[in-house]
Image (cartoon, rainbow, N blue to C red; front, side):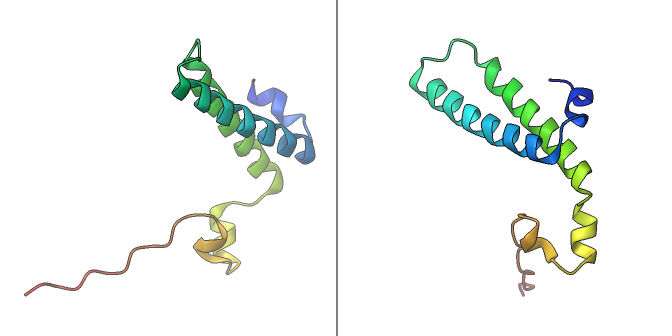
Amino acid sequence: MKAAELKDLTVEELSRKAGELRENLFNLKIRRRAGTLESTSDVTKNKRDLARILTVLTQKQGTSRAKRMASGLGPQASGSPPQPAEKKEQR
């Protein structure tokens, strides 16, 4: 799937496609673990397609991590893990 094709889709269509790809990726991973997957490259292709869709979706929505941080939503709202606490000096 090409990024140029994705840019023509609406936000709703992109969200729907992302959901479908997540389900498909889940099924591919299960089949890989079970040993019934014929081509393991399908997993990689699916992951890349999902990343492309999510990138275009983020661009269309106009929400970047920097904007979320500036608006005061913080790292918890962006889905990133919390930062580890500072280590104390050992003497």
